[in-house]
Length: 116
Length: 115
Image (tube, helix red, strand yellow):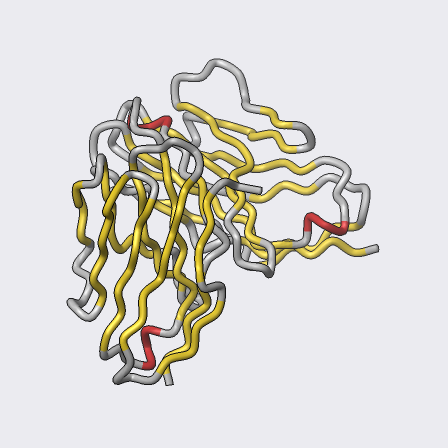
């Protein structure tokens, strides 16, 4: 069975500092994709970054980077130089290449609070 | 701006009402999804349409009825809902290709309150 675990219900970070949001996953698929989404209080789920299981390098998108450790089955999101607008819920998600059909599995989320 | 719009953004309805949620995607995608997000619960997939054909129905009660008239539009028809159906309903779309690489893009959601 596929599973995503986010163990941090809430996190605080000082403005301009970096923060790491944890995500571990479990799947039997040899090929899979990992995604991070941001959900502000307005409700919209905003796609941030993607990492493929066979990608040789860790994904980066601006201030977002994904610390992908395949052997540990972890895909942590690193946000550098935090901004007040980064305060939101963050969801880790996974989609298997073979199993799970059309399902993308989402974690429970981590609420990030950025302090001024 | 994500390219996926949803209307209405907020909806309050009684248990005997009939209403519909609308989703429209402007991204040229060929797959669309309905998700339910309740407080303190993970995102739940409800329905998936691929090329306008329903390919997944995640054991959703029949009081929720989806409709996909074309690849750009998706509806969720609601009737005789229960208070526990109050939630944020999110629509998403994606372009089918290599399955594990399909990125879903979400709309802003409809906040539904059933009284």
